[in-house]
Every structure is written in C-alpha cells, then in structure tokens.
Length: 330
Image (cartoon, rainbow, N blue to C red; front, top):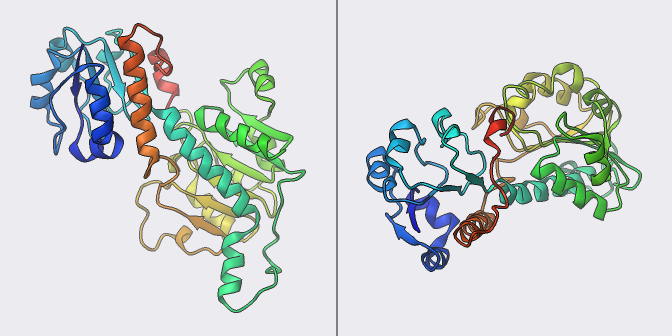
C-alpha cells in the first residue's frame, strides 16, 4: 500500500523522527515528504495515489475536491488529537476510517493531572514561596491536603479521565465521582467510580479535574454558579479547554483565596501578559503543556504506526473515530 505523508516538516520530525519513518517504510511505500507548510496543491498531487494518508497538526482539511481525487484512500491515520481540523462533512459521508492519537496524548494529560493533584494538595507553590522568603514551617494559610479519605471529582470519562481514574485507584483513592452524560451506570461501576451531577462534584469534592471535550455542548459548562460551590481548600484543575469554564467567574473565586487551582488552558491562548491568573498566589499556571510535549510526541507517532501496521495486516483498528458522534467528541 502507498502512504502519503501530509505532514509539516517540523511536526513530522517531532512525532516520528527518522527511525519511525524507516520502520513505516518497511510496512508501506511512502509517497511524498514532509513540507515546511502543507499546501493544498501538494495534497492534490499525492492523494490520488494514496491508500493511506497520515495527517497531524497543520495538515489541510480533507474537503470534497481532495476526496474526489482520493480514489484509493482507505485509511487516514491522524497523528494528533482532535480530527476536526482535518475532516469535512463530506469526509464523514465517504466511510473512510480515520484513527486518532488522542489516547497517546491522554496519557500525558492524565500524568499532569495526577501530578497536579499530588503537588497541588501539598500547596507546593505557596510552600515554595514561603521557603524562598526565608521561612521553613508549613505556611499557616496554605492548608495542605492528603489523598487519604479524599473525594475526587472528574468531569469527563474519556481517555484522560479513565487513565486518571486508574492512577487515583493506585493511590488508594476509594471515592471517585464522575460526571459524564455518555457514561452509563454500568460503565461507571466497571470503572469503580460513582456517577454524580456537576452540582454534587462542585459542592463536595476535595479535588476537581476538568477532562471533558471542547464541544458546543460543553462550552461554558462550568458556570459561575458551580465555581461558587467549590469547597474551601479544594483544588481545581483544568487541562481540557479554557472555553469549558467561565474564566471571569473562576478568577473572581480564586481571588478570594478560598481554594487553589492548576490551570493549563485558557480562552483564548496565549493569555494576555497581565492575565490575572498569572500572578495569583493560589494558582499554578502552565502554557498548555499537559499533553503533547517532548517524548510524549513520539508516543503519538508510535500509536499512529501501530494503527497503520494493523490495517495493512488486516487486523482491527484500535482507535477508530466514530464519525457519527463527531458533534460530541473533541
């Protein structure tokens, strides 16, 4: 089979590297080479020959004109998270399978969330500031929490949420509440968690992690009324998307100092240099690094190559995207 690399040069180098491309060449015939910028004319030249296409961040959308020429296209391996930037409505009706590397990205995000829970619970930022100022005893106002006996709330039981559940269970957290309208009671029981409402989670949980997809349905879902319910001394974590949370309401609540937060995403990005969340003593803010950075990018490439290898050898794909649910997935 022929495989078209519809990738930007810098992205390809970060995700695959030379060794993975060599490995791919032993499975398929590679056509094309990564480009400084992926242009539509480059895609149109290659797509007619391709049985498989690899896309990622910076790839062009597969519109009708491209698909009309893609006579042999049987698989798109998307070496990134959301497939929405590369698929069109026309693509959805062509019955061409597309895989996602979201599970690989999800591992990194879950790692970050677990680290935030451990370090945020200890009020790391405030304790470090006290030490830097010459102190040594635990800062009185920074009431450190332990996981033992804690109630943890997870909003969204996708790849990230499910991985985070496993991590928490390894730390002997026995009370995990999940809000996800697409998770059944049976599914929650199988995961070892309890389905709860958003109101329950925001009113009672010691730790709250936002891991929901960014869709029309979830935009502004974490409203001011919910944020106002967060318990004193709780920890709020958002690694999903800034648009899910009423950011101005979050800022108002955090300014009271009642609880702490780890914030990896904002709306828009990047936030302004004088954005209030940058300087609050009870906020750790990071530049959207929870998922695909450093070596975790190679995990994305590895997953994409495994999917291609399975496809070429007539095996089932592990992570095909259900395009009938495109409006409710990230």
